[in-house]
Length: 577
Image (cartoon, rainbow, N blue to C red):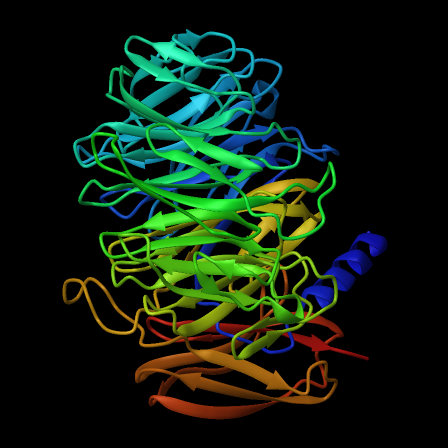
């Protein structure tokens, strides 16, 4: 037990961010003994967040498997079923319901989740061997893709199976304004269903496929690759605007051929080897009926991880390798700037592009005010992550969310000090602009851990773990119905110095709105209240400070929480010997 405590203490010291920033976490959920992650998410009409992901036994089993929420809810999971889990959480973090798809030797996989205008939930998945839906008493065949339809209260309605096999390796799942399904993916062989033909060519292809709710293909498009490679994942992304315009982005090695859209060769920018061929990113636009409107290519070695579109903008996230041009514009990759976030007009003109000394952008979200949120990863070991005006130390493998305005103005960065796995997190919004993050944590420890600072969640077991977290909105001005949406102008801030400390530390806080009832409290890592520094204090908008005498507090890591009626800010404090 002492060894586990020492490991935990060392890990938390390693992940502590020296420059504190407001977390604004309202609640979070993770698991015990559940080797999995939530890969897709959608918010329903009642602001419930519905997530889905595969579950399996962890490397070391130390008890039953559970999903836990920071408000105390728990639900047991039978991991021996190798289930695909679909879970709903209400806006306060309570678990509404869980549905499972039982796998064979391996779990069924989930590829996407959407909500239709009928408020039904549609899940795109595929079976590894077979998949059984216990509530419907229905089974589907080996390696088949399927769409699972549920009501938002969790009532299963139907399963539709792709018996034609035209859907392969799907990477994006959307629903169009006329309620058809839009799927992007990768294929190795030609696919022909009725009058729909998708051609893989010699190197495989990305494809874009539109299907109705009976899974009948309506139209298809593809991007053939001129070379077969083991080095590029070919994971194209697609998204559709509320007006019905469709965009697809990806990258190709050597070159690509668009059906009815011309042939492109990637530029040679450096000496090539068999394991390093020229490649570039592409962005393509289609009409709602599948007609290719235009194709733009980056002209440089860049790769795409995320695509998000609105009626006003097209945003791409990923990373860039060279200091050449990017969609006809010069881009700064000096000083090892690799992370890439770019915004385009609806016609494909580059409006602005951001690079930074982070690793890459993994996921993108856009709120109703067109503010952009990017999940940023850093794998540069102990090197600081520099993002615009912020320098974040000890950010290796942590979850970071950066926000920009639609014009590209940097707003803020938040870090949760959560070690991440390779699974990309998902960013979702409710109608008030509250932000939900879901994904997969990297190796939980056997103890109670405050993964999300103010949101205390059990983390019992070893292996990856799914998580969901809700963050308070930080949109720049008020929107939504009065009395329903409470909009914070900017995050509250809380930090302290010195840190670590022994006898005393000075807390400095900034509140962005007047609040008649504010508390400042200290918790241990199990969520136990240790000390209340002040409570029910009326604070005006602005800055303040508080000196904390901690001579009697045992050495260790604690969480300080500044909590008002609508806002919260937190920071980790370290008490030394």
